[in-house]
Length: 262
Image (tube, rainbow, N blue to C red; front, side, top):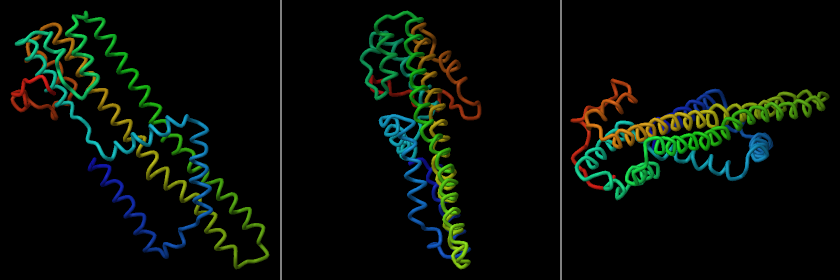
């Protein structure tokens, strides 16, 4: 699991719950009608805005945000240098036999092995990257919109509660509890937005940026292999994608395993 996400969830929930316990009874913060307004309204408008498959894909992606680690760009650089060694020692056709879980890398190796020219490889792989950006944008937008809808429904629930409170002004003892219930919907909406929806959207955006960097490394690495560049030259070119203080040297990378399985 992603440690940063885990720490964020635990610390955020702990601080909020602790503040509630210190200030009073947690039961004062539980109201079913308010939950129905915020939760139901947010879900309803989300399905009105997006297709069901997009919402499903968004929550599936959110699960991977918290359960899967991001591939390090250094690993992508290491992979491309290993492919460079394989192509120089065994020939470009050998890249067509590469076994990898990455469909993008498999496609790149297949294009190289088929003898495709540089402009064809660059165009095909660039299209893959742009398509990935668009797919991920929709997933991120689902959570961004939910982050906007939930506070709006929180305010709507508060207005409903205020109307109900004002209708009972002849009963002064009911004003305080009614006002507290009215404000709970705003609390729920703000909590969902700031504690879940917007952070997940931000995390997904960060993951997309990192994934695009890895794919760009593979793209440029594929062109370098096609041009039969020296592994050292390939390393110098691809390491430029990584901040200098985060780069691994060639000696630190695992380049010993030159088998056709990555």
